[in-house]
Image (cartoon, rainbow, N blue to C red; front, top):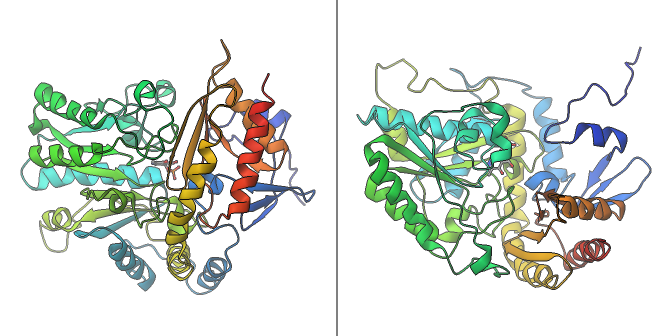
Amino acid sequence: MRTPNDLDQLWMPFTANRRFKQQPKMVHSASGMYFTAANGDRLLDGLAGLWCVNAGHDCKPIVEAIRAQAGTLDFCSIFSIGHPQAFELASRLALLAPDGIDRVFFSNSGSEAVDTALKVALAYHRAIGHGTRQRLVGRERSYHGVGFGGLSVAGVGAHRKQFGLLLPGALHLPMTYDKRRNAFSQGQPEHGADLADALEQLVGIHDASTIAAVIVEPVSGAPGVIPPPKGYLKRLRELCTRHGILLIFDEVITGFGRLGTNFASQYFDVTPDIICSAKALTNGSVPMGATLVSRHIYDALMTGPDGAPELMHGYTYSGHPLACAAALATLDVYRDQGLFAHSAKMALLWQDAIHALRGLPHVVDIRNLGLLGAIEIASAPGEQGGRAQAVFQHCFDNGVLVRASGENIVLSPPLIMTANEIAILFGAITKAIKSLP
Ligand SMILES: Cc1ncc(COP(=O)(O)O)c(C=O)c1O
């Protein structure tokens, strides 16, 4: 007997459940740049699912690899035994990462990749005799997933306020967003490299000997696509090195060609100590996270009694065979289709297209880098984010998926996007903004 299928039982994440259930938005299948609803209506995906599907939906080599893997080795934990795909994938990721970052810890999501990075940072300092370094530094208006670690260093108040005290000792740098000086910057803004110096103030107050790591998104994504000011990340790197603090880049969105390079680290020519990745690692097809760690950190932890685990951390599904197969096929697709180079090429068109919206009613800022973009739409008095929500709804009704995040429409399309699809996307957004009362 089939179970009844109504909308009541599912508690949807980061969703206005009651509103959704009054007015459900369902998709049924997906291919390339489009979702399709049960009635056949198509929806252009302006968000790569949720910053994930860089090679487009229903990418055949990935689908086939998952199918084949499921029929060969469905599951094997990598606690104490292993399977070849997990090792192969780690080696492939080490080749893509900046020099010196060549050890890989697998998990199942961006949140877990972040929590793993924070735990590795703490364990590293303890291993080298710096156990007083226990503070973790994040940044105002940042997003690092929803685990207690990532949430503690995250900087969006609305995400934190329901959940109590979080981790003790977390500190925050100021956000790099400065609308007054940088509004409508094309690519990286000019002003704000000096905001990295706030780390000196934290060191002055708390002493470097208490600080384990700084974590930042190289380009902040979910909270509104905020590219770093020119020189900011280099400055942050210098300060972390000077004070013996590890630098973690949360590249859950910026990894795998989003900026036209393997990782944003290479785009900005700044090498952190640890990189967090997920999402496009498997093209979104199977959940997976990977924390990429510098060799010197790994080596420092390879101590203690031979035969005892060196890090008391791991997930049942770390290195899941289906995820590994999906990721290996995904990396092949990225390479074989030259998708990162295509992304870099389309980014120029993308920049022109998004900035053409300047001057539309209520648009108070536009930001872009690589194939990321945000259009900031001033709220009507007393209706925080209401206009952005209305634009999302209008676009959806007209066959285009965008995401409303506060006052922003945020965009992150599959890297396979063509000039024609860029025109459709921004045509729909323009119409939606013009329709606002
Ligand atoms: C920068 C960043 N870190 C971490 C996460 C969390 O990833 P997940 O939702 O897979 O846990 C996200 C998700 O959007 C993200 O953008």
